[in-house]
Length: 205
Ligand SMILES: [Zn+2]
Image (cartoon, rainbow, N blue to C red; front, side, top):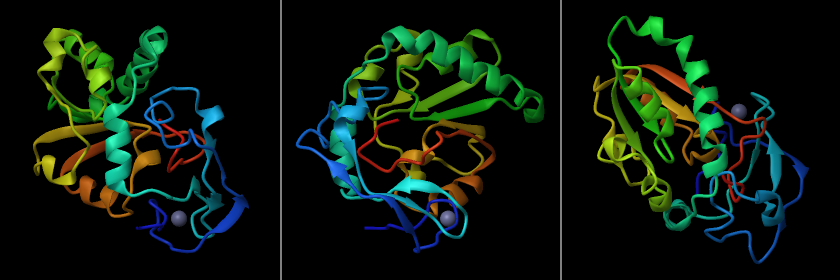
């Protein structure tokens, strides 16, 4: 299991808090986006001495996480409208930099709300990747066909196939420190929004 820092690759870390896990920590419910994660506990919280990233240490494998993400629940219908508006406002400041080449991939696109918003803006070619089958089933029919219902894999992103890769809270869930570096080679821009704590399970999204 790769426990290196996903930002700088360092294998060093200092413990901030010990793990606090329960029988419910590794359930589809605990891995549901915007779920009641506080009850699910947390893994060991550590800080990278080289770049300062505060994160959870992995305690499960990528395959185990994949199964939980795929079975997770769609719990944020009431919040979706506000989430989409927040993401779109953040994105708007970047749109000019694309110089009219607006092929957008959103990694971990949930119910596709942000992609729908981009499509409604009229000029975007959009694609999404999302492992949660329950969330994808709630996407608008015009967007659902543009979503790959799978875990994000680097080889799914072909070189120069997108002008922008958008990822909101993806960094929190990466397993490899090389992913961001390799992804940057495939798309001109990456746009990330991350939480205050880079969680690496079981705290979802
Ligand atoms: Zn680091």
